[in-house]
Image (cartoon, rainbow, N blue to C red; front, side, top):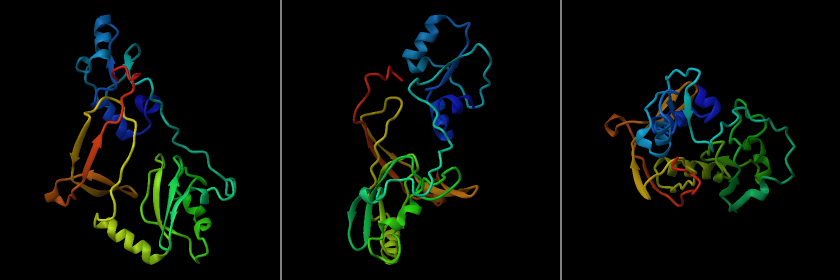
Length: 231
């Protein structure tokens, strides 16, 4: 709970930080060399868990550049954006599809704590003479910015969703800032399956012989920060 309040507000990311020993706890009775060594060399860091109980006087180490994100976004009232704001973010348009530049901080659909900051209510501005607004064929998380594809009519939406379902439509590429050091390049092959968690579906690792679908991620490191300090 302390990590989620003071370091990282995302539960999954918090668990990864702890398991990777990017967050660790040390007692004040240990010599200074032990504390300094744990900062410089990861293998000297004591393992801890999400259930570790914190007591007064303990030293908690964590990446100083990280700060928790506010979970509740300030609602945006209808009409408060500049006129034509979403139109100016159109990257591509033909008779069937639109591609837009989605900004970070905007949700695709309405939901709890979203307020007016969702793109669905702005879709009528992208009709460009058609009778109906365009349809989303995929989503991007609220925290992400990037290119989103929209179908301009029902037939195009059906075609795009079928192609996505068959994994024959595109390859996705993400750029991100990571904490820690990774190999220069690599491949992660992990079958995934959808499971219901409350009122939403989430992707969870699962064996292929247990209805898991093949999922392949190729990654490469573009640059390291000289300010990382080994963290």
